[in-house]
Image 1 (cartoon, rainbow over the protein chains, first blue to last red):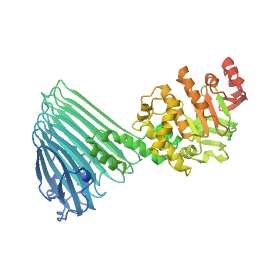
Image 2: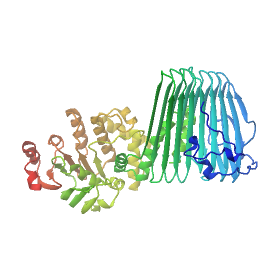
Image 3: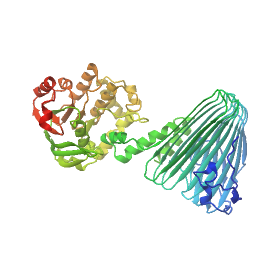
Image 4: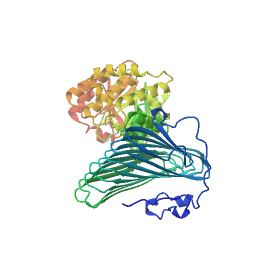
Length: 342
Length: 249
């Protein structure tokens, strides 16, 4: 499989620059030339259980890279885990290594939040998710990090046959924020949905990169990412789906659609389908544009002030991604979170 | 009262309205008829404030207020409503949500209290029944997948709920079969009142059999070139616009 290069915060030679193909649009080395000093340990914030608190479940918390409890967990039956990756640091760096294994037939709702306080920190999160046969994992990610933070999350997902993996990443960006997902897809009834939404303002940068490798026959992947950039923000979408030789019967769909709401906003999109099998159904679509001027005028003609018309149209554009989230409780948290940022 | 005085509007570099002057007193319905390209739709856009249709010269006042100084939403709050020839589809925004947002935005702009959700639903149900519209359709994204007739009914429904005082109907009959035309015209006629002015823009006389105008004006080459009573519409239907073209050119 075409693995994405792994980062090691202690080794500056592992920091990719734009000369590394997979990091072409997110030049980490431009912002980070040397290994940052290690972040000190910090107490877990006593107030609040994160944005998903109301949905219950067990918390799995890391503060400045250190697990409060355990860094790994095995899931059986039906569980909700709130994975909170908290950064409270100033100009230092820390790395998280977390692993979740879902046993055969189990169901996990993984509510992941990247909560940042302080500033100019460097966070590197390395997540491993293993889904045994017929396991079902829904992962929802919300990021809320300072505008001067650097944050890289690299997630490796391995699926057993018949497993179902659903992911929705909602990114608000940072100085450089990258959320990578690499999925090893065995086919044989396994089903993957990789969705994303980004809303970026100021000078923020968010990069949603994914690689799905279809190794066996009869696997499905559906991907929908939508983004909105304002000011001088920059959104990056890189989606790669590989269908290996013999992975016949694969059905893979990828869509990325973005709105640029300012003169100096930027969106870079690189959708890729690499197909070595013969009998497959694959499609991708990519659009980048602005809000429809005639729709904006229509709404204003009926009395909506320009800002309200823009916000309503933008929300409607993004909600297509939110509407795909199950269960409803998580969907409503994400809807409110996004609406508050438009 | 609507007063348009010597209105000049260019679209891009092309002059479209070239000194249009027209008064529509309160309570009256005036029809604007004219050949294709005369500037009929431009007049609707200029009055409602569409970007790209700004007045280069002239004045427009509505009940004594300078309309040209206001943005489109401010004009809407003052009672200006343009019924679009081709109503726009708004994906992702349910029709009900849209109309309630618009109504409350207008009320806020006028310093009035917002309409509560239950009261709004009552108003919509009553209006939808009058216009023979399926209420479930209003839960769908505005105009998306609606037929031509459904879109026009949706415009009339918004009119009924927003209660504008200056109605501009741009080719409201286009795309309507005779039954739909009757329903739409009934909806418009129900809004006739001594406080409301209406400007009915149409190419054909047909609509005016259903919405009877007090006055008919001929718009050709960017100006009003003739005005008269309802009989003028019938004359145009019989004779066409040819005789106005050389005179205007």
